[in-house]
Image (cartoon, protein in one colour):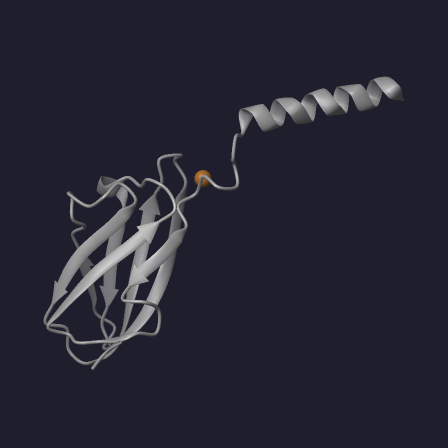
Length: 120
Ligand SMILES: [Cu+2]
């Protein structure tokens, strides 16, 4: 029985070494502009998503869903900081919008989310 515990301990130590900060590695959103539930002017909406880790800009996506259900794919700014996904959207009609984001973090994991906001 003592040998069993020793093997279990060694295996769990190996697992921890192989997965450093496994739970913190995914890109989690820290703050966003617009914030969820915010009301903004539709002339120019500066989209700024800040994550807790570096992301792969080229393999991350931003899509706007219009009040009528149409979708608009945004091109993320390539010169954004390593932990931000940014884009500018112009001339958005008034109504209820959704910002869908999908990011690939440098650890290879994909996370996604949906930020509802209103254009006045
Ligand atoms: Cu991850």
